[in-house]
Structure formats: structure tokens, C-alpha cells
Image 1 (cartoon, rainbow, N blue to C red):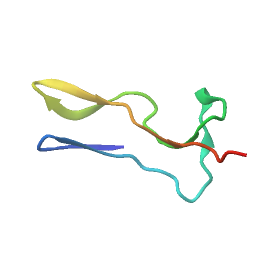
Image 2 (image 1 turned 120 degrees about the vertical axis):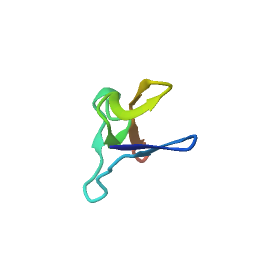
Image 3 (image 1 turned 60 degrees about the vertical axis):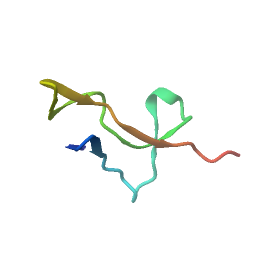
Image 4 (image 1 turned 135 degrees about the vertical axis):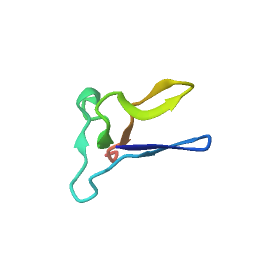
Amino acid sequence: MKVELKGNNLIITLPVDTKNPPRSGKDQDGKTLMLGCSRGPKEQDIKVKGQSVYVNAMAYIYPPRD
């Protein structure tokens, strides 16, 4: 995951695996399919008002309905 501060925008780049099928979200009992995840909050090399910025990111899709 890459995080940048550009002006008043926080830009988050989260790698996703588009070649392999998405995996089932462990906490969701198969209700979502995970594309990419930061695996919890991560401290970034960015400071706002002297405070460290933490980012928690997750990208998922819902499985097709039967």
C-alpha cells in the first residue's frame, strides 16, 4: 500500500490481484470476496499537524447472487 498527501487529498494506492480469483473475506463468512487489504491500520510516513497518519484500507466485491 502506498499513501501520499497531495494538497488536501490523501491518495491511497492499494495493490489488487486481478489475475487470480478473489478470496473469501475471513470475517465475512463468504459474504464478500477480498481484492486487496492493508491487513489492519498501518502508520504512514505522513504527518498532519505533527501527528502520524494511520490508514486501514480494504477493497472487496460481493459474490454473484444465485
